[in-house]
Length: 559
Image (tube, rainbow, N blue to C red):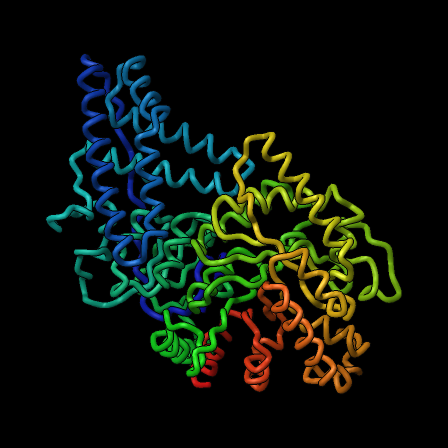
């Protein structure tokens, strides 16, 4: 057995035979031409044909996966119709008197290098997109037909080994596809009945290819680099799209374990088919919004795969915990914007920085505290170090132009803390207006109710914000005076305690008195033994781990 570690970009397990897609040779001959105008006309005609092909591909994707996922190919069409792109191609033809194919390839390389040099990982991922659309134009110029043609007679680059729409696999089997790289348009044309999963040597989690793989529900791993070996063709492999592990020629123990995991996943999928798109509503008509918790942008795929209605808690501190230096505004904007775009119209509630206590980061240089759970953490850091806080708020505001983002403040104990945070938020808004940067002017702001103080002050807090979300983990810790990190206190730290449940009840009642909604984003939300209690208390929203969404929906719908 050979074990390869890559980067997970789409969760799931695939077990099957490998089909290696040979790298396509995009070599283009450089020819000198006598009539630049005629060559420019060739380019324009090829570009128009490529735009029409992308329109057809866009319609195909929209029909199968929805309008949100089809927007990628609208962006590809805009790339081709960009005056700067056309000017670059035509300028090369006119000045260097070269053929259109060579001019398109040269322009693609220039634009791709420009994108790759940018600080934003989202923009870096666009390098693959400009190469993809340019390849499409080159194919038209070279007389290659594309597999999106309406007559179905197409066989282009993506149709290697017959693994695309309208194509027929040579032996009728489904395969795990190994490739150096896959362009977004190639991925969109994959025949899901013939493809079990994807493994590529190159690529990133931010790429449109990765997003499409998640949309299609295909387990996918990228970045295996030099471990990519064409000799793996025909061998059995297991890919774990959650951990990023690839096992070529797996031993019996590995096969047995992954078959078990796959069976569990398929049972979960059966529940998904039964409940997907169904409202989380009791038989008497009581409606509860069912969201999911995430820690990093790649987790959004699991939210969609489990049919959650939105993200109720994006723990933004993991963007800090997983780095050795401060995450820049651009880095954070990329992360938040990626999730917002992927979630479409679904809410994305992002908790601001919650560092401290059990989550320590060296570069914050926090002083040692004997009792850090009661110390310098979360909103306290943000309000005393506003230069850190404002970077995050600017990134959140900028990302709000790309989706339905809301901001949630953790560890609140007073109305003044909320007002101070809102003041810094208004400063960030004012700066962005001055820079003419778009954002959602009416972005919602909420607070986590996770301290007894916030419960006692819930009426006053409700007048300041748009929603409450109860963090039951910390609320239990502070209500019962039990350190949640101490194993010796487990018997005393009972989240089912009447004191904790009464805190939850008081919070819900205060929220409803002031016309705002109240949810639960702590672990208690997924505790099925308490579901009836939460329904009786009138909870509006529950945010749980993605895999808990469907079992919880099933319970609620049977009440």
